[in-house]
Image 1 (cartoon, rainbow, N blue to C red):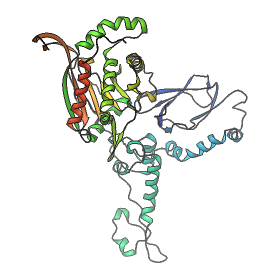
Image 2: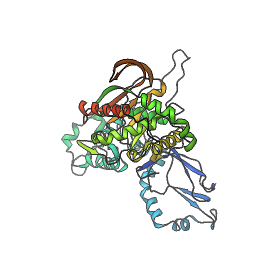
Image 3: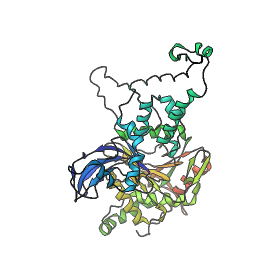
Image 4: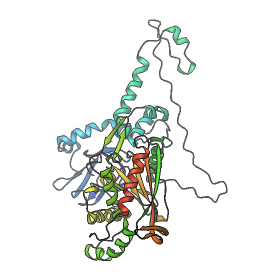
Length: 452
């Protein structure tokens, strides 16, 4: 899945226990933050055991299923010998997930619904919370030790254990018992006149998710798909996390326009790739980030993390209207040809739904082309935990004043707006404005005689 991907959620099993599986045949579907992927089998055989269920969150490296290859009969093989045949590592992993599976397999004790929470919780954490009767407020109050402060399985299990021990910390006297409310009043012990520790009061169930109703009977009610829910949560989280500030600058890209017009046919004929404006702009942004390394950072609490690599995210709209941000790794090390191939590859695979989980991880700065839809400029939302995002507006033919040694005159130029959103917690106006000005300077100084 890629070195920067740590976990994924199983969204669907396509094979049942006992089913025959061919090599490279898809066994299950998984989902990371933004990418849905299929997991194929590496061998041919029969699926004899599934170690995780649908909606389980699985760490990279864990065994998720066991496939029996040629050399044994599934029906004739007793359960215990089959278990003994599993390598010791697989056996250890199986035991490690037993605690999690009991929460996943058991029906929820309450009707808790955590979809209204603005925080992200894995399906496994939600299932444990439901089983233990933990409310949304309690779950949101738990300090997570996972990535970006997420609540992990160990966090919620530790919380449950502490919650169980808390009422038993000290015996309650008979007099104190009489002062308890009726809902939590314990029975007095007959042996020594003391009362048992009060049992924790049952947590009220979270209100059921309200489904809107069409008043006039003509409006269509459509539930968000999984990706749209994730995007919605990320956007709200980003606005609540970062102090967004925008800087705008107009730039003359006539030189870039003319160079592309002159070279795009030869480029496509030689490389078999279309030459768009995007790789040219990406090359320039990567160059500017090298000049301003404090724009290539992230924030974690009170600490600033200066990124060694320049990994450019390129926001792309999918055919279904959702947004995805594949990442060009080490963008500053690519020449224009390499950048064009990377942009086209990620763009084509994004449209075809063939991106891998690692393709959207590790970005340090993001560029979005709002001009694709005719927008002159925009105010993009920062892609957390980054601190800046640049929006490229539509290129327009406009009358402009042209300064020459012989004097000024009016001419037709190709111009566009650059919209730079940055996190004012760590990026002040001087840095944010200087960075976007450097991008504009590089665009206007583009060498029309350069090769590709």
